[in-house]
Length: 146
Image 1 (tube, rainbow, N blue to C red):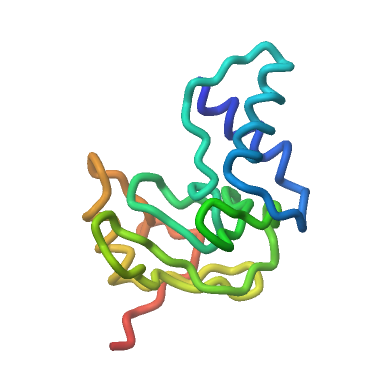
Image 2: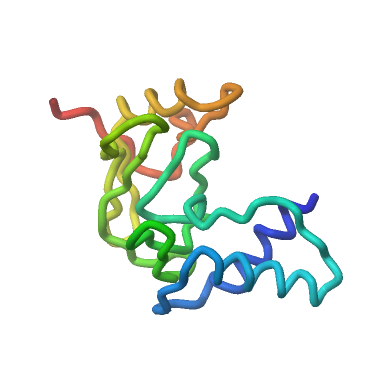
């Protein structure tokens, strides 16, 4: 239940908001303070990387209309808002890995995901979580060209 409060507040605060660079702490404080004013205490973690156009992890399902930020440096995000006409690459940084892995690419707001990498991410996810739903994709699935 509390997670939906966080999700709703992130979308309300940053969904149509663009252009500002914010550090993780600033994003988290904005959400917590806004919820506190509504008498909602949130202990859940608020993780901006889970809401990025250019970053994905194997611990959360990458959903349509969940992208709000571009990670521009460690702990620093550019607020782009929902349904942004984003055109850049999407990366996965597996735990204990030294390099990030190219998962796909956004082109004018449409996402193209490498099928082989999506399958690898789904296998690496915790408790069988499907990070990229290849049966019902909201994104374009591309075959590995290598």
